[in-house]
Length: 163
Ligand code: FES
Image (cartoon, rainbow, N blue to C red; front, side, top):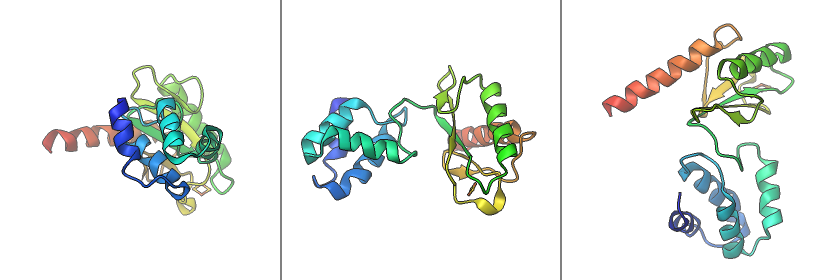
């Protein structure tokens, strides 16, 4: 995402504080590595007159925002109390080990998979809850999680190849 694209995204919104969340979402969704680069934060600050430190505070408050480049597939494992904590931990460990990612919040070396833990995903009835790019995996456990993720990726590639 280059400078002109950043400016174009930001100027889709009027320069007021109420639009900060939407601007950040727009930048992150448009960025091929699904994160908010420092240049975008500086430009949002100039445009809205919101101090950089305040923008950084908003980004760090909401865990859907990232300051780090992320993979094409972002897998989130719920760590909130209603999900089976033990199973969530096992799922997270399995994903990190399989994709050779040192710790939650980081991305595989091929830049394809980011694995993170998160607060409640809003799917408490089907715990343990795991999402991949904001879609939810069904009936997931630590034994089937890799199969489900790989199926998701294969299906998505299949759909994209016929579109
Ligand atoms: S507590 Fe895990 S989805 Fe709500």
